[in-house]
Length: 75
Image (cartoon, rainbow, N blue to C red):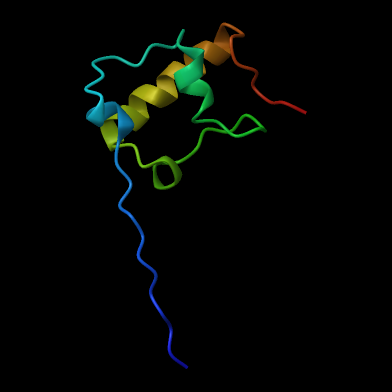
């Protein structure tokens, strides 16, 4: 049985491409794109962000959650 490998485009960090200096927790458009409908933070493997920006993104999402800008969990 022959397995065919499909071409998969390499994911890139959107924050590095846009040269974002700081990920703001008040920017809800940016942070909502990195959480699921259930409220979980998406991993680097899913989003393609680099490790530096993934850590900043995680703290920004957690800060937005603590200020009730983003829900902890949606039903």
